[in-house]
Image (cartoon, rainbow, N blue to C red; front, side):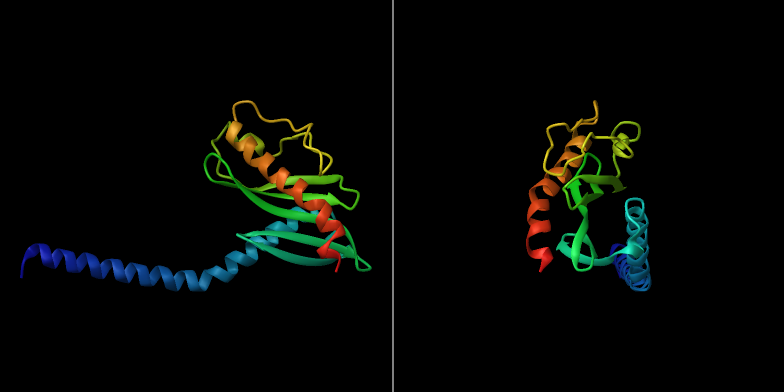
Length: 172
């Protein structure tokens, strides 16, 4: 047999074996990884509200985005949006906690892969965002235009949704 053909078959076999092993490992770890991500989000929500005081509903929006609905006596008290937008290095994912009066309880970055030292300034930054429907006071980070734009995109999505979510279908 031709040496090139043998080498090709060996590489093909190794590729198939490695792919199969990767699929098996993924099958064992996928659920655990999802549980850990959910646990970390609950920890982040606990920074804003004591979850045990509320009935918590999860509304999946698709694309890994969701709304955590916190109710007391079947009345929506708070919404926590888990939203994503494209940053410079990767997607930026944030939790934005909104009270029923549309004031912002807080926000936190739960995932980012931005440029160290510049884009990572979005973590823990005060963007001067205190009212869900008002972005006029939003403060960008100098030098981190794309990362700041990702954060503003998330805040804009919250602003576009929040009034309808508190007064609309989520109350049904």
